[in-house]
Image (cartoon, rainbow, N blue to C red; front, side):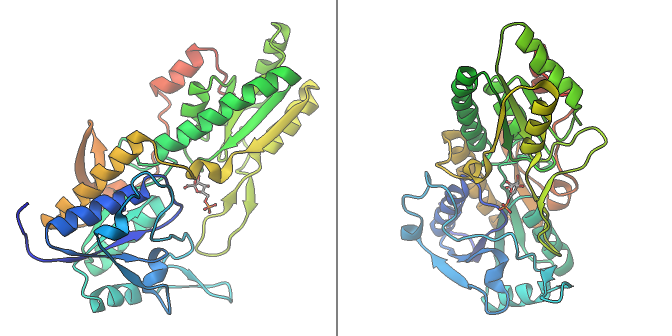
Length: 363
Ligand code: F6P
C-alpha cells in the first residue's frame, strides 16, 4: 500500500442505527491506518462536536477488532443532534453548525466520513455546501430509501429479520384461524414491507407508495375464508396510509425532529374485526428490525462502502456519497443522493410479482 499524504480523519454515525455500521467503521479505520493516517470517531453523532458534547475518541486496529459481525455502532448515535436545528427548551431551534465546523478544524481533522440515512447525509451535504467541509457520505438505513444507490447497508438484515417474524406468525395464525397484522418499519418507502411480505408469503402487503382501501383488504380476507383458508397474514409498513387518510403518528417529537410513526397495524386490525368479524391480532416488530448481526451481504456491502470512502478521501473527492450502482461501488454527489427519498417504483417487478402471486396490495 502506497503511503499518501498523512491525514487525520474522523468518522460519524448519525441517525437510527443499522446492522453493518461497525463493519463500515472497521473498514474505514483499517484502510486509513494502512495509508499511515490517523483515525478518530465522534461519540453519539454530531452531539460529540457540540456544546459540552460527548467528544471524540481515537480509533486504532484494536478498537475495531471483532466488530464486523456485530450490530449497533461502537461510536454511539443520536437522531436528536441536527446541528442546523438544535431544539431549545422554549420550543425554538438554534443553528449550531458553525460550532461543529469550528471543533472539526480545532481538532485538526482533514476529512469526515459521515455514515447516515437521508437526515444525516443531508446534514453532511449542508456542512459541505455551506462550509466547504471535506465530507464523504456512506448510505445507511434499514429503510433502503436513499436515492442514487441500489441498496443501503442494513436493509438486507432487516428484511431477513422481518421475514423470519412473518414465518413465525403463520403457524399461530393458522392454528387459531386468526388474522395477524404485522407493522414493519418504512416511513415513506415500503421496501422492507414489500420484500419481507413477498418472501414471507403474506396475503396482504400495504406500503406507503400505494394508499390502501379497507374494502380491498377485507375482500381478500373474506375470499380466503370462502376458499377454506381461515387465516390471513397482513404486512403493513408504518408509513402506509388508507386512501385519503393520513400517517398514524405515535408521538410528535418536537421541533427539528421527525414525528414518531406507529399504530397503523392496530387501526387496520380493529377495522378488519369490525368489518369481517374475524378475530384479529396485531404487533409492531419495531426496533428488532434494526438489531442483530448484519447478514453476510450487509457486512460485505458495509466493508466495501467503508473502504471506498477512504479511497474518496485519498482522491480528495469530497461532497460525495459512496453508492452501489450496477453492482459496483461508485461515488455520487451528496446533493443528488439526498434530493428525494427513493420509494418503491410502481412498475417494480417485485410489486408485479406480488400481484401475480395473488397477494393483495390493498388497492
Ligand atoms: O432507521 C429508520 C427508521 O427505522 C424508520 O423506519 C423509523 O420510523 C425510525 O427509524 C424510528 O427511529 P427511532 O425510533 O430511533 O426514532
